Length: 400
Image (cartoon, rainbow, N blue to C red):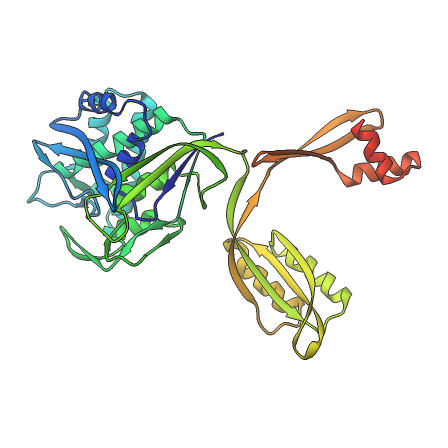
């Protein structure tokens, strides 16, 4: 499976994402020429070599009316409530520019508009005004459209089957915007990053812009560490600011070992030494029913050399409260431990196959370079009983 991985450990902005993806293309100069024939009024894009902490990458530049815009790189979002002191455009104007001026495939146009709708929705929530009253500075609008259009078009060219990203650094402190001084992440960025793993990091300033956040939210399929993959190309999209670490987005594309996936889960556990085996078994059933993904028990040696049992459960954030309540209701524990974990899973499917012994359900699993088939236990047990053979013989019969 063709997988694109985005390392967002230094944040994300539209121009940085565009530059990183540009480095993955076979003919970046041809793409820049195409972008300049794209139809954006008064906009010229370019790229140049850039170095951060000794690493060579690409800086993607946008000129509007002959002047390069810098606000899109670790700067404030452009959207705001109606302001009569500046030329401005609404969301309908953005859609008119995209549909009426850009020479791009319809799917790319739809992607550009949908990303901008996310930004408008976030600004609407931040300013507590309807989306129809959100306006964008005219120059900033063309600048952001160029960044968004470049990312959308490059992703259409690269055509990954899956996009995976690291947690995103948002920065800390405050940022100066048209409305004044705002906390980092800016309100619109914070709104866009809901449900996305993010962290502040050690550097002060805005590391993730609203444009970057909107692109991440729209395109990224899941957030996880670098998956098992055979990397074919790596691109570095450089920002303009300098930090002790290389200020860039790193993009890696290649073939993943399989279509397996990973997800963030919570591990809850407790130790008990005053419950019977029956009580522990019942508690495990109740914790399962509360929404746990998996529950297991391990014998442990507790304080004062007392034999006991550690009960562990895996769950997601949505079911955490119910699982915690089940622990306290059905065990004798006085406290729980919680830790975050990554759960790697194979893709699974269940299908029915006709055999000489009747229909048998077969579970298939694949991913990370492996593929397995296994008959369901209940069907094997039924065949073993009907034929008067052992479970092993029934399994061998099915394998033949």
